[in-house]
Image (cartoon, rainbow, N blue to C red):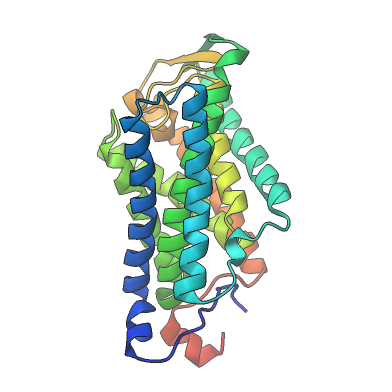
Length: 295
């Protein structure tokens, strides 16, 4: 028992090609990126501002489109039920993930404040919460679907959980290397804290809802509540946070996510979820060992 969703292969060479792991990764990512790009181009052509009622509608359409596209891909190519996006229990899992994400960032900012590295003052007030919340949810859905739902899950089928964890975390960190203020240190930090933690949460639940909730809550708490830079992007939230001190402690221009405090807090949580996944026997060996052990 390892929790891995099994595809139902179709007959013939074409199906074998379509269901080869690399082919499936390419098909899924292309399908998702095409849908996302088309919607974004349409919104830009219509001159829709992200911070407007029409922008909110576009974000909601994007969320639904990403989940629907992923579901269509799984049903058509993998020919199975989409357990990782099953709606039964979704609200409870998302809510638990959201509470965990808020708690992890609150713990991070508390440590920075106690160290004298963070100064927190009033910000934009309650009205500043709406758009950051929606933006965080959108980022959570898109990134978790692509990285954990597609990349991690499909690599894991063949190479096992540990290799999939390392590769997907490295890719996740590398993708953040293009953000404002990014450095080699910030990319490694993202890989260690978010790449490992979010994959571990997916391994523990074998669904995407808790990982999405955690991801969205971290971003929202960081930017929407505390007004700290989110992966190098300026934020305006309920409060305003400024940081002083060593870059290794504060994260520098990239924000608290590149801080040693965030790495320790999130990596600890990630190890706990990996342990819980192991208790559920949800850590899969690579396929060449699976056949020997019968897992």
